[in-house]
Amino acid sequence: MSKNRLKVTAAGGAAISIADKVIKNIALLGDGFIDIDIKYIDTSRADIDKIEHDPKDFWLVESEDFASAEIMGSGAERKTNVKPIMANTKKFLDENGFHKRVPTEYHLVVASASGGSGNIIQTMLVKHLLERDIPVIVLLIGDSSNALSAINTLNTIAGLNNVATKHNKPLSVMYVNNHDFSDDTKLSGVENANKAIFNTLSVLALFLSGDNESLDNQDMINIIDQSNYSTIQVEPGLYSLTTYAGDVVLPQGVIPTVARTLVIDGVSPDINLQLLHHKSGLVTSDNVKDIFKQQFPLHLVSSANFFTLEEVNLKTITDEYYSIMNNIKVNKITGTSESSDDDSGLVF
Image 1 (cartoon, rainbow, N blue to C red):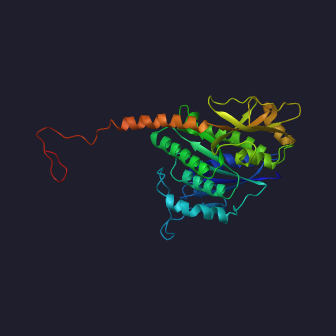
Image 2: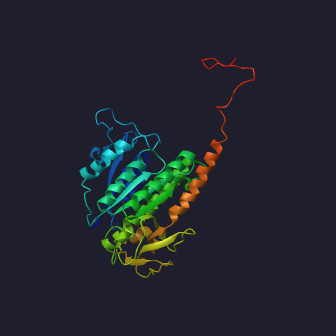
């Protein structure tokens, strides 16, 4: 059993699905990986009712006045349930015992950036966790396949960045854009993205286990929350947290800051990056060695500027949408020059 625990909160319908199809499987990997607890929170029961779960692990966001019928989701409109979500998120953390930093616990908050409820819940949970000085990683699922999804994704990223900067924290975000994994169908894109999430979180679960030689919990906290460094100064804001096997290849313009590396005997921990800080550890679990086989060295890299590039990509899509909308003239049909209309709307 791992020395540490990863407390996962799945916020919203997409996150509930990811927790059920992906994260539960990571919890089954066995020796050498961090133990995982999963909680669920949403504004409706539509998605939680589709999966097997312990009812005590699900929190339904109550309506604003706590007296009317339950909220029935947000329908991809992010403003719909902001007030009840804000009223519920602190209570969710309090009732689940997330009051302060625990040396052997890490937190992962999962949500879709393109939906209506999950990303609002996620942002509020992150805000309160940062206030409590609890190390938190964001797993954010973006989507740029249509205008509304791209707008929601961009605004979610901007909101998380606001929260991080207002709390003077570098916030670690693991980001996947479903549209980047699409080929002939949207479903295959989601499935491919889920495979990528599984691979990424499997490596994260290894790094956070506490079972690796020479990488202690403070080493891992320092890469998740780089404000813990005092000698080096890391600006607050969003930092992409990415896993690699072998060589690290970053997009042009992305600047690495801090990294951790895991190896087995006979493998070099060298990393082909200039970094503010790098530390390596040794995997001792035979189970882990068997699962990853020839993939070592494994790297966990924090980088700046990734979300600046993603902002440009998303704004390109949203600008195209606004350009199209400016050319729509469905409300400017007047009929013939001799026609007239009556109070009912009929034109003669």
